[in-house]
Image (cartoon, rainbow, N blue to C red; front, side, top):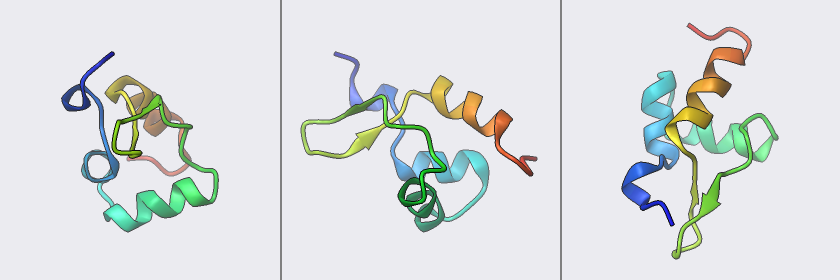
Length: 63
């Protein structure tokens, strides 16, 4: 299995798209964030950077 260091959590996603971590959590609650690529052993959702980068390019109003 891919290690957690190779996947992003909410703070890494927030940093990548230039928003607060709570904004990313809100995106997920509202179905605006892709489904996690996996959930780590602690129950935390994780996304591969490629998943988020592709999503960020498609999202409305991206910079």
